[in-house]
Length: 257
Image 1 (cartoon, rainbow, N blue to C red):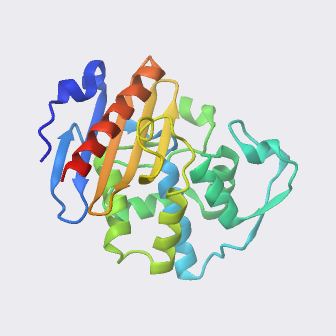
Image 2: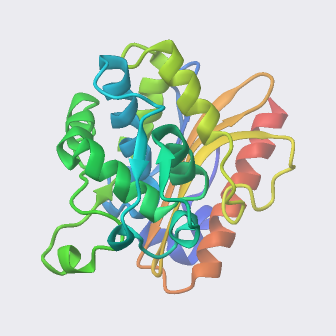
Image 3: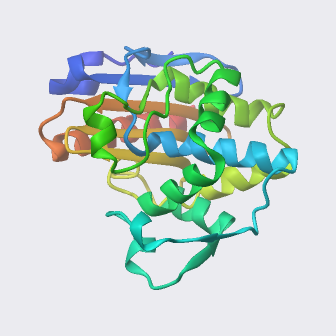
């Protein structure tokens, strides 16, 4: 157990944040604050979209080399795929872009291919009771209708624990998902104050009023899950700095042991 004070960790975002930190080897909870608080998932839900894809690959219902066409009407914002002229991509490349660059068009193409229900079934299978995919990315009409994507820090721990335990997906699928998460390009949050050589397998999520980062931090001796979710935060930079501060604290604790 880390001897952290929630006020000093979360500062002004104490009532708006959730933090859950677990040693993956011993399953010991090292720190928790409001781990079951439900947040808008932002792009964190893309982890479960990826997980559902690899379930279907394991079942033989999907191939990673399948070519997915990009219709013009499906090109949304915050997407490299939308900006490129390429008309189709291999499914694996779309998964990679979805996680590493949080590409929204790639995500929506995958959701269209596998269906929302396959994602929500994965969440039920992993007992992620508060996690739901209710709409595609950038679908503001669905959001107005009350169809939202939501999750908790604890639910995201259950997802990464399933990657660690290894009895839900094949070994090849787990290796691929871990590799993809390790290629994350967003360094604005947990990696904000970390040395470049530390291994972090993670996914970030960002909305105008929400900043999230969840995943695994590794040293030679330890692998620690972190789930940090901040909602109703009007100052995006404050959210980035808060998550970066937690990352710095976590790294210092890991190095000290």
